[in-house]
Image 1 (cartoon, rainbow, N blue to C red):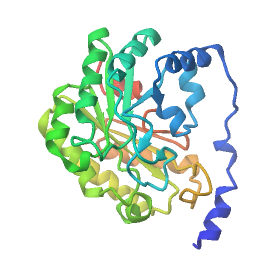
Image 2 (image 1 turned 120 degrees about the vertical axis):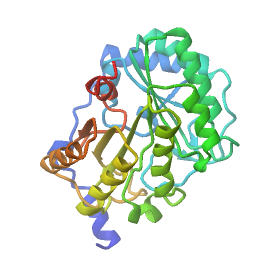
Image 3 (image 1 turned 180 degrees about the vertical axis):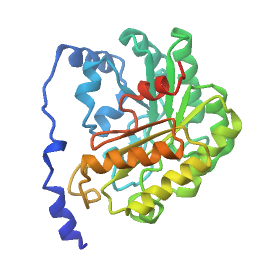
Length: 295
C-alpha cells in the first residue's frame, strides 16, 4: 500500500472508535491534583482515548523522568527533543498524588531517557519506594523502557519489588525499522525474560498495537515469543495516529477480530488478556492483577 493510500485510511475512523467527550467533577479534581504537584501523565502526553474514563474513576498513569523522549518512534505522541533535568522531588510528588487520589493500583511509566547512565532505573526504584512508604498495600505496576538492554539497570527496578513489570513490544519485528527504529524486538523479549529470572514473584506484562501493517501470523508469533519467556498479561489495542505526521493507520481492526486474538492468547496460557480497539497498556490494569489471583 502506498503512503498516500495509508493516509486516506487515517481519516476514515469507524463508529466503534468514536468517543463522547465530556468533563466531570472527578476528572477536574484529578487534573488539579496532578497540576499542583507538577506531575505528567501518559494519559495526556500520549493522547490516550481512555483518559476521560480513567480520570473519572480517579486513576492515572504517572509519567516520570520528564516529558521529553530520546527515542524517535513514529507512532508516539510524546515530544522528542533535548530532555530536561530529572526532578528529584518527583518521587515524593507521585507518592503524595497516590495518597490524595486514594489509589489501590498505581501505574508508573516514563519517557525513554537514553541520556541517563542507567536509563532512569534508579529513579523508578525511588518512586516505587516512596509510594510504598505512604501506602504499603497499593499495587504498583511499572511500564518500563528497555534501558538499552542494561541488566544492572533493570535489576534496580526489580529489587524495588513492583507487583507488575510491563514492557511493551508495541508491534511485530518486521515493522520495527519504520515504527521503532531505535528499539530492538529481541531485546524487549529478553527484558521480560530477565525479569522472570531475577524475581519470579513479579508479574510480567506486554502489549502490542494493531493496524500498523502487521499480518495475523506475525501477531500470533509475537504472542508465542511472549509466552516463551512466561509473560503473564497481554494487551492488544488499535493504533490511532496522533497526527498525519506520525505513522499512518494502515487498517482499522474490527472488534470481532480483537476478540479472536484474545481467545488465541488465552489458549496460549496468558493469565489475562485485554484485547479491543480502545485497549491501551494501562487500561483497567488492576483487573489483570486481580483476575490472575494477585490480590
